[in-house]
Structures are given as C-alpha cells and as structure tokens.
Amino acid sequence: MKEPTKILGDERREFILKRLQESNEPITGGELAAITNVSRQVIVGDITLLKAKNEPIIATSQGYLYMHASRPTEAERIIACSHGPERTEEELLLLVDHGVTVKDVKIEHPVYGDLTASIMVSNRYEMKQFMGKIKSTNASYLSELTDGIHLHAISAPSEKALDEAEETLRKANFLIDLEQ
Image 1 (tube, rainbow, N blue to C red):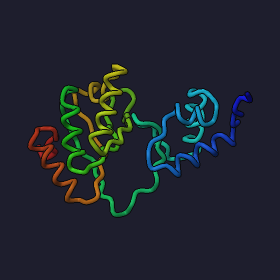
Image 2: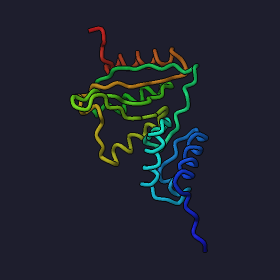
Image 3: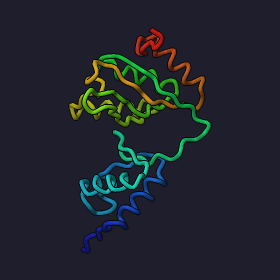
Image 4: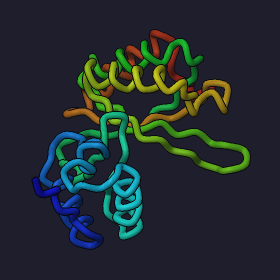
C-alpha cells in the first residue's frame, strides 16, 4: 500500500490558503495536517508564514479562519466591559443571543501594550466550544491580567442588534460607563 504524498512548502501553503479562503467555517490544524500529510506543527508554521505575508488568517477556538473583507451591511463597534472570569459565559451568551458575533477580546497590558485574542463566536454552539477549550486547557482569560477590564470588537447584521445587545449588557452590569 502506497503512503500518501506530502504536499511540500509553497505548494502546501498555497493549498492551505485556497482551502481557508473557500471555507465559511474554521478548519482545524489537525484537519489541514491530515489533508496535506504533514504534522500539525508544520501547519502552525505554515499559518505563521501566511500571516507574515499579510494574509488575514486568524486562529479561533474552532480552527483557522480566513477573514474576508467585512460585508458593508454589517455593523461593528468596540465595547468596554468589566467582570470576573466567572461571568464570561454569561457575557458571551447575552451577546450571541442578540445575533452578535464576538470577534475578539483586547486588553491594555502595562508591559506589552495592547494584547488581542480572537474569539469569533456568533452562536451558542461556538460559545460552548470556546468555553470548553478554555476549561479543558485550563487557560486564563486575558481580562484576568487587568482585573476584568477588557474590550470586545463585536459585529451584527444591524446597528439595532448592537444597540439592543449593548443595552442588555448595561442592565447586567457588564459595560464600563464611559461617561463617569
């Protein structure tokens, strides 16, 4: 029985890029490794090289995702939040239940400056996967470095959806009142 041929170097990176661009769903490093017959670590290196060439690829808890240019009809904004780690799931549920995509979390670190981590959750299933990864890896939340203070880049099909989500977060005491 003949072993599958490895896809090498530039050809493999071109294949990965095309695969990510054509997919509307994240693709895991393990899936890409199996398809190209290389290790997951080789894929991590390939993704790093593609990012160095300014390809808009992000790593999410569900896998790698190619960030196509935002649709002009999609509303976006940044919100400032504060809460302990025990309320993270509640915060994310309030947002996704309003049809909002939580794109990332950002903190201002005293040494490293702005630190941003991709989240990319837009429904309960993705949120549960994200929370499961946090728990299974025993990872810390970025906001733990700043006593709970953090920003989220969020998007939704309309400004109204964002307004409603923001009002729900305000009532649940998640938002930082910027007018104080």
